[in-house]
Image (cartoon, rainbow, N blue to C red; front, side, top):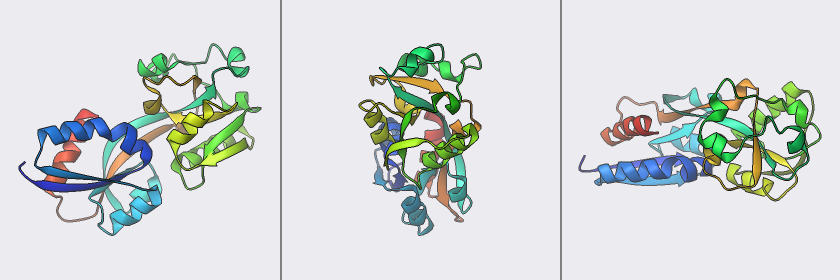
Length: 225
């Protein structure tokens, strides 16, 4: 295509860890298409999409999807991350995963043992703040485990919580796509909760016509993710 413009929105996690390589490849293949990337909270992106201020965004929040046209995008898996030198890692050694394990997809195998948060009841936690999809999923898992977590800090960004946990004697929840090829001094645990698997969708405003450039990007993303 010789011309076109796509304005897409995403969280910091999407914009920093999922989209860069795909956008670079797509732009190389379609140099005439101008790409605009917007970063906001999920709620703000949803409002912008409703107002047709965005061509598309990404979400795994079922509530946001109800009002939009959607296309399956990718799946990620939530892992528990614990600072490497914490004593609990010794007791849980047979369950602990390394970044290499995650990169090789070991956590996706049925033979990979999973853990319950009940086994980490005594840990302190760094969580994402309320309103974030991962916060809601985290609290759902704690509810299933039967206790309220000891939260020492909350913040709005998945990547920030991830890096903070490397320096605090605490645990947090991270996406497997964030961990791949990571050098962080953390141990990772596969969680035995259904909501630890997240299905992301590309969301578009409901409309009669999808711009050719947007349709081309959706097809390219789904083929190359």
